[in-house]
Image 1: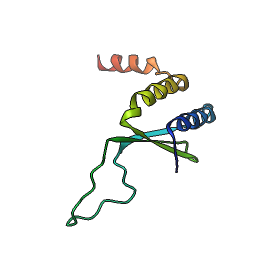
Image 2 (image 1 turned 90 degrees about the horizontal axis):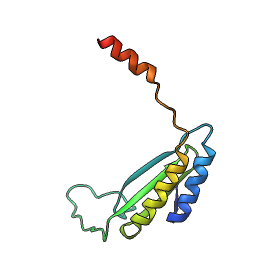
Image 3 (image 1 turned 180 degrees about the horizontal axis):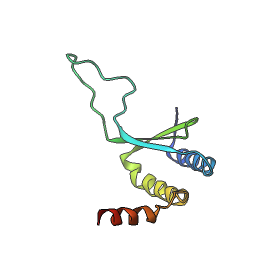
Amino acid sequence: MVLLENDSFLTELTRLFQKCRTSGSVVITLKKYDGRTKPMPKKGYPESFEPADNKCLVRASDGKKKISTVVSTKEVIKFQMAYSNLLRAHIDGLKKKDKKSKSKKTKATQ
């Protein structure tokens, strides 16, 4: 997995979306990141690690290529605006819901 800066992550994410436009999918995950690179110690050992500030780990994958970035609290607003614009531009390939199946269900229940 490649850890990138926020701007380079967004450009690589754009490339992933363009690559998977016709076929394939892009999986994006977000989770809280406390800066640890090693697993947590077992019970019985004192935990002395205190994170300085809250961070968010953003990962994206198309099945073959994996990219990630860490967003700090100071950069959240800027990253969120750029990320939402990117999603709006590239989430136009979703399938529309079939309205016929909904009307069949309502007739069956009546």
